[in-house]
Length: 455
Image (cartoon, rainbow, N blue to C red; front, top):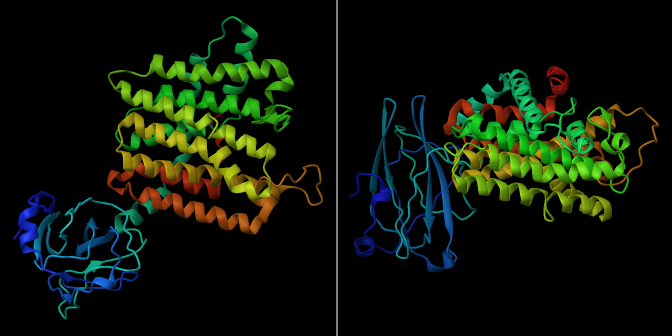
């Protein structure tokens, strides 16, 4: 009998020798049930009851005793031949010791990965059934998407997090770094046009702030993140300069001031945008501390930003905005607004050395937040627009224009829930995740004006 960590089991031959043709079926996955986790009822194997293709089954288990919770994620592969043997796993957490018996081996492969603080899911066809015990000593909680007690606690903390102070203090530092990064050189007029947009006082600095927050989540330092954060703002400003051009969105104002081409002319605006893109990459390479960020991470960051602004990223979003119809609204929003937020969060994680699965979680979070902000902005603009105002032509390129305010609000709530769900997977990092939670809440409540608060 195994009494230590189940991952240590590597001898497949011994497992196969003990293998018996039994199958177990879990019940009650979508609700919360209390069981004593030491009795298992097995059922005769039925070959036709389960698909023959390889399947990964996941179950989220929260073992609790008093106010102490333990949480693991168990992965089962090809779970249609199971070993009729109870493996005991003893785990100590705080002052509580919990014993759990697991039945998880298969004849084809054996993998039990115990990953603390992992979000849980179960398919409709589930394995293993526990008998209900009259003595409820050690309950287990099985759920499809309910947040764990610790994630609920973190979410409640995020409501009281002082995002205004956090954001504005970062903006002050970012503005200083940007001012130093874009010094006026020859030819002076190009640099003045570059600085006009990149250092605009009405900018919220959302991409660099999100990048730094994601970096700090995994223990990275601001010193390591500032060069990439500034580069993201340069790239973001460049994309806005080009978007505002008469041949694109033909916008006369941006960030509370006249758009770049209305001040410097179309030709100079194009050059300013063209210059900001490579300057961002150059700034990352020349200013990222090599003792804090290894070169392979820097290369991944550069590749991520290039992907974001390229032909499958923001450029594709602008193309669809110009040529696409109402049916493309979802893709337009994803590419034009989701890409930059996604890239910002991912770059922060890459700088700090986050694991690949954590990077993908950041990717989903960032995309959801980016589109969420865009939709809420459109809703606010629509509701604040004077009744009968016909100045703005309906282009059919936003959720509000295509589906109306109510449907757009529903989409926004779905994105908010998705972003929070992704962040629940980072609960093991404690308070370090609070800024990322707060960004989601701020998208809805807009409790302060970022650019005014920073002045």
